[in-house]
Length: 238
Image 1 (cartoon, rainbow, N blue to C red):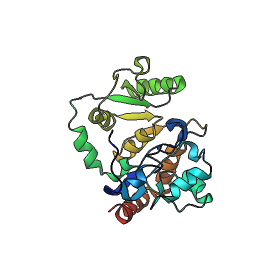
Image 2: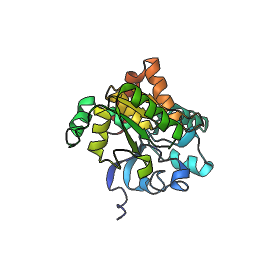
Image 3: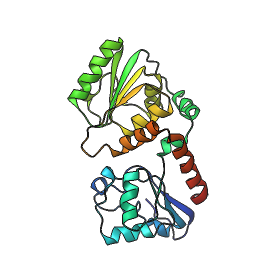
């Protein structure tokens, strides 16, 4: 991958999802943290960056990296609280999935050739036998076929769908009669597409992303949160 020249771009946007989860990136990634990428553009901002548990494995060096950003936004309030305590100015923004309208996702799903009907979709990021059995029981009670899709390519954890393209993935969610998921994005797309669903939380500290999103829905503030996120983009990214 060729490294851009210094100041080549007007704006660098870093995000979203778990770009600042150092457990996944084996330390601070020089692009995601702006260590290298801040030199590629005239300005650098983050959008809806996320980190597991809302916690940082950071010292003064990492905080200095983030101070080099012109604007910082994260996806979870738990992460914002941690960064604010460290002296940073932070905005909380929604995941990019929620910036699109329902019709935009329906247009993508229309490109899929899938034509499944009458099924319960179980979409797991973290495998749980108990969750699988729960979905299996629900499917039987509702008279639906059980379709299982895993974020990991494990045939033993998938039933009916070994994998899915982006358009097939959205189509599976859009056409499902009911959804059981342990995925943040499974939860987010279920909300955007107006699906009947269950978001399974394990209560071990790794559920903060989905839990925070559901709390916004339950408080009636989700629409306001999305609008605030769009305003952040208009202010800092245009």
